[in-house]
Length: 256
Image: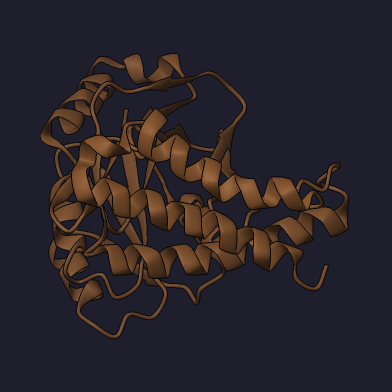
């Protein structure tokens, strides 16, 4: 079964080469949708055999759905420009493709390991973080969310055994900056859902619960989900995630 690999990107020249190297064995088509890179992202992608198209940024979900629609193959693998398939995952997908067993499901989730710099984060709720990314063409698309978008399909889904590497952040500081952005977008998304009737319960109306939620988040991630096993970095990430939850609450409760 032929597979299209689609990637949305902007200013990812340092990472996109290794992302594309890792899909060469499974891809029958590679499409990169660039939203206006000012570095060498496009030339690097083209040197790795990708077809590059420009599309002004539409938002996370809409941009990725635009890329999905461009795919010509029966199956589509949607990746971010900082996600690298491990050799083991490449082999697993290739076997599904060659044997035709890929058609037993409508989609496949890919476990994902977050990296901060070169450090893999295995605990604290950050792993396995399985993402539905390999789908039968036309069987689904990304939901209409401002942040934390995910593919929804109508049929059965299976989680693969091997993982991809998410080279998301060079440092805890970068992680913190991203969480600040996601907190604001999550608050906007929640308010949008409330206004449209999509959220039936105002989960941020209880002040005590809102105060305790960040505390619980830290306890859950650092102790119950084993973030302590990732050492100092695990402590830092648990703290940053609890700060993210607190900011999301504050941004949501402001100007309600």
